[in-house]
Image (cartoon, rainbow, N blue to C red):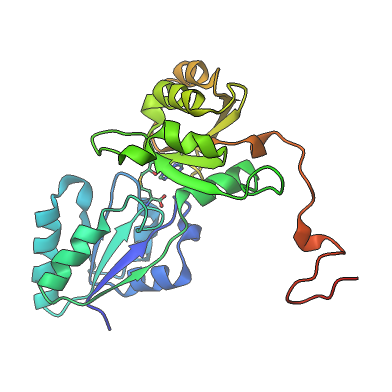
Length: 252
Ligand code: SAH
């Protein structure tokens, strides 16, 4: 069994961690969790005597030092990340360091916040004849964006866009998307704290959304969804079309 488990905690609702993730938290001797985003209610699963660290106040080196010392004592460590660890989770550098230290690890996926956002909106992102593509991205911040991935470039596809880490720059997000080719009437939905008890939904269009957000005051932990799927007529899915054969059904 791996010495370190990197686990996706899900978007907030403690019931949205996987059964496997939950079991690993229950069995852990040490849990290091991303305190700013992981719902601490999940930590109620920890066994008595489990050592709990909030990584919000720790550097990567601190996290690695705690991990290394714990593993040396034969302890099992769970590193709890918000949503799914593979999306803006900064886990690659952690895994590389663990490999270097010859510490074994595995990864348990989680429900990413862009999916909890779809659930909150009761919205399918991929509607026939509207778009069949979801782009997961962010606005350029301290982390630079590769040239071809600027929002204005990605906008040219007219796909559903789920934009992480960017609500505080919503005015720039909207301006770049319009510049890139989205009509200014394109609907936008922002879900704040999807799946948490204080979840909120804010709606507008690319033209109005910055003002709507400004009226809401400071918002953190929010997903921006931009897509024509939010308001459109669409063709019924081919999957349920009588004339469409698929693996489990013959065409009539
Ligand atoms: N690995 C995470 C993302 C971490 S980056 C995942 O898979 O969801 C942090 C960003 O994720 C936030 O800025 C916000 O855009 C988004 N986010 C995280 N939790 C959220 C939630 N419950 N509701 C809406 N957005 C959320």
